[in-house]
Amino acid sequence: MVAKVISGKDIQGALNYNEQKVMEGKALCIQANLFKKEAGNLNFYEKLARFTDLNEKNIRTKTNTLHISLNFDVTEKLDVLTLNQIASQYMDKIGFGDQPYLVYQHTDAAHPHVHIVTTLIQQNGKRIPIHYLGKNQSEKARKEIETAFGLVQAQSKGKEQKEMIRPVDVEKVVYGKSETRRSIVNIVRMATRSYKYTSLPELNAVLRQYNVTAERGTDKSKMFARKGLMYSLIDQKGKRIGIPVKASAIYSKPTLAFLEKQFKLNEVLRLPLKEPMKKAVDKVLLSKAVTTKEQFKCELEKSGITVLFRTNTEGRTYGITFVDNQRRVVFNGSDLGKPYSATAILEKLSAKEDTVKPYRPGFTDKVASQEKYTHEAVDAPTNSMIQDLVTAGDFDRSSPEAALKLGRKRKRRKGRNL
Image: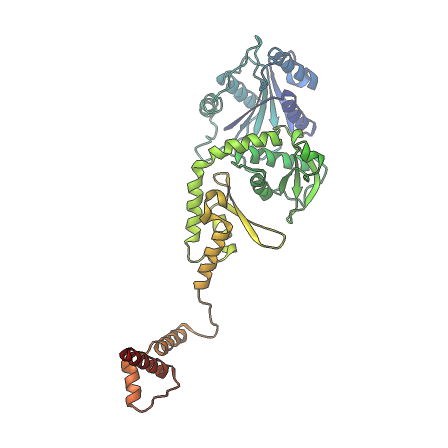
């Protein structure tokens, strides 16, 4: 089991996300803890009112919402009763058993999972502290529940608590429909929260792997002036297609204000990952087999690193970006150091390519070997060879050997005159 804990400031947004899934037939509200009615008899407004009544008891607290997902192995078949028992035990163990919460069973993924929505504000108006909740209480609860219910352990199969998102197949998406929006939202949420990036272009280097891009508009647009941000689908040529989604309309709120905070935070968080990135690039550059830009990109791709060479309208390469999809970090070449800039890397590849002799078709290895020997013998004749030719009377003064021998004599004669 993998538990993902997200805190937020919008209880209505968390409810909307799950209720929208219910309307689409891809989720079902299966439990309502400490509500006046059973889950199936509650409407949206009754659910929202229960939470907002508590949140209004502490209006100074902005972060008042908790949205949790419990994810199970794809091989596990869990009925509603078992899911409710797991959810209840989990909430008790992390200290939220006495809080009102809603449990939704989702069926929109290959693996079984539930979402839980609750508030951090208690009946007395105090806020439940959640510092290190995911790392401490949640992790302990996860392990105990795995044992109690005989679940597949998250660590037993070497699983990492990461969302596995695939690029959007733009050919299959129906633009303007829920599939488009959901695809964008899932990818944006994963990228903005999982990767370590320090600028919007670096974030776009991640998003474009999944056929999505973030845009602020032109410098003179109203959206740019108001610091707005939109996320759109793009095709293989990078052209925007379909209907974009406003950042403020996404539940996780990946707005420009949010991203700017991430930029500063990630500057520090990605520092330990700098050396591993440099070592991976060095290893490929030292390979004698890698002599072209495409070979360089291909070899790093084998290590999970995507390389993007940035070019201007004239086709000149002016920059390079590395996206490590294993460690989930982004670096521009200049951030790693001058030897990792686009210019330096292309010069190194070019120098290695020049040292590789081209293949001459029509020659076998044996013939090529004899040709090399003959060529070296002519270019570098020994004194004994030249003396034998002179003695035999078969000495052609126009030959390379004669030029070399006569040149040496002239130099020695000139030296003696001095």
